[in-house]
Image (spheres, rainbow, N blue to C red):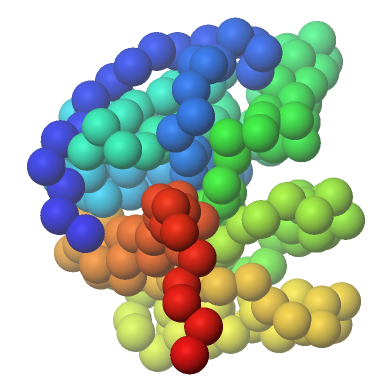
Length: 210
């Protein structure tokens, strides 16, 4: 997929205030400081499109971007930042749940996992929650350039093997590096494939029967 345009549309603190659009939405979520903004900037080829911060847990809004005037890329708040207060955590929990479970335009949720780490229970619990609720999702391992290829491969396989203990079939997964642009073509190709499959025009006439 060639990215011809990508621009910010709107930020919202409530899921029910998101754009009333029929365009498909591809949302990105993960633990705080997992590299989500850097990945979004890398995918769109627009440096600074999504703001990056050294402070975990800064994003508390649902941010909509429109790509090629054809689909929305959605930047969701990071989860699991321990320094948030109880009320703030409840607000964040409700915000994410409302969007993930009730947003009809959500076509696929990309769950970002830090490839440098061993499986984290909060990530496993969130993925289990998605599976139990039938949310379409894929896994994106980030920061693959921070370790050796062998160590990244071991960590990725370790995470997938942990999932296999509960899952009969694993969701699609991608290994990425924002700095080296690893996985960019694979992710964009995946989105393009879904768009073609689910949003292709319906023929006006049925095919002739031979």
